[in-house]
Image (tube, helix red, strand yellow):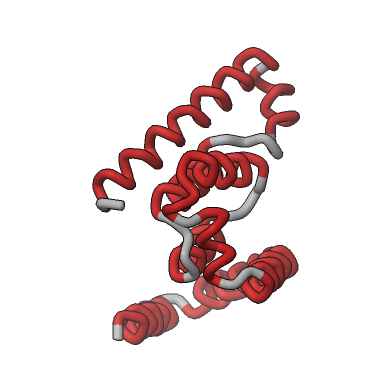
Length: 160
């Protein structure tokens, strides 16, 4: 039901925009279309990878490696994976939901998401160029440690 409300609202506002200024609305739709075409290959690649992972890894396997029972090792595994990968948030959150449904633990997924958003191993070379090696290493190290703390707090708040 929520999706219908959001889509109806978006279409209604698009109609209002069209009524107010057709040229601006056309340009906006063309820009949106070009943006979609630019991110589509990346988006499809990530969806394909997620699909393959979920097809290969059944819920018991997910649970064993990154479930609540995996403990600190599972948190560390997901934190490292999150720190290394470069996935847009609009892909990461649905993927996290699928992993949770597949048996992943809350603390493990919180570690994955927080390191994914705060630690940038993949972007470190660019960051080093602008901010220097020391600042980059310090920021990423502190962000990694903070991510582990956030994962613990999330598990306490959620109750896992």
